[in-house]
Amino acid sequence: MFALQVVTSRDIQSLAIAGALLLVVALVAFLFRGRLKNLMTAREWRICFKLIGIVVFALLLIFTNLAVEFPAEKFIYGRF
Amino acid sequence: MPEAEAKIRWGRIFGVLIVALLVIELISQVYVYFWAGERFRSFHKQTWSPYGLVRNNPDLTLPGFHHNRNGFRNLKDFTPQKPPNTLRVIMLGGSTLYSGIASTHIQGAERVDSDATVAQFLEQELRQDPGLAGMNVEVMNAAVNFNRIVEISGGYLAEYSHWQPDVVIVFGSANNFNVSMPEEGEVYRREYGIQPDHAWKLEFDREANRKTLLATAEHVLLFVEDHFASVALAKKGMTAALDDAFAFTQAHSLGRSPRKPKTYADRRECDVYLNEYLGYADAIAATAKRNDQEIAFFWEYFLRHLGGVRPFSDREQAVYDKIHQGQSPKEIDFNFYARDQIAEFCRGQGITFLNPLEVLKTYRGTVFIDYLHYTREGNQVMGKFIYEQMKDTFHRRADRIRQGEAKSPKGIG
Image (cartoon, chains in turn green, cyan):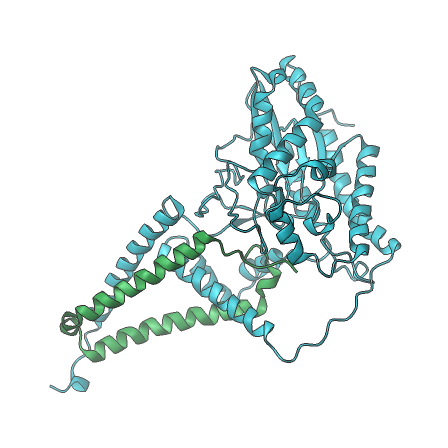
């Protein structure tokens, strides 16, 4: 069977940039953690990230369902 | 006051979330702009079409892959009504013409940009032809990845034949006659090549016809990801990660049964399949004739079928070495048999059959980018080959256009 996806150097480059951006955001958040504590309480931050978690896991559920029912090997040029 | 008893400031929580989303969206938009060289529009490669299942999404944002407003892989837009004094060529097909790439590819090779498919090189050849001086030339690349003759014929009969092309060139043979041949009974079970539903048809049923909660959620997501770069990027990343995870677990699963040796379909069964293909080809040829359009069929060779036939470049040899193992001579025989049957069909219909084998036997540059598709250089070679093979046809049509010969379809009857 033909392969599923192509990883080109452009994709690798974009992944590297995305990873670097995430690191920068984490670093900035760490440096300004004092201000973040002033913005919301620890409990409110936990709720905030729980909400994000719910959305992310809901998306993961949808995509996993699709990946099981419509395996990538059938979609050599990607799913619709 | 203890934290547990403090009132939760929901407004602040949602405010932070909204601001964070806006910041992420802004960063995503900037990121896509630098990655793709243009503003984010959509990551969807296709849109649904009632004629031929799907079309290329004119709004696709992907480096090197520009689709015009007609959904063609061209940089400029076209009008369905052919302008005066114009020689119009429309090319239909799958990924070879579209110039997509697949897995094991030439080291260092990237995607072929939309200004370097076979269509653009054919247009260059036509523009340089002194015999066509003073004439507008349009070569449309209407290929869609994974188009088979089922989808090509549907699109042509219902739509593209009405774009008044002078010449129609049909690619896409590789999606009808795969790198492997049918196994015994596969054709009778309607499981080979053009017989089963297209994978995207299954997706169409899921997205458009199902009335489930999941389908609704997916619809909402499709809407959101076409409007927000951050959501589109998140989906791209998540689905890729999930697919990789599934592929990894499948590759390392312990419960795999050994592959059964293949028993191939006999000639009679192969002929049943060929007959089915030729039914679609008949429809295309009849429509072209009815609309007074010249037509040609192009044969796409697989790299792994050309061992000992083509003098591979070093880069092609590297790909060939990776993929040719397990290739049965019977499969090559079937592929060439199918080619010969279609050539025979074309001869019978007075249609041009474009067989680039001689070019592949003699040209020593790197034509293949992977197991099937062409490099930019390969596209240029094929554009020149088509031009040379069909030069007389192009000239004949140009003469008719100059003479102002009526281009209206033949009368009824």
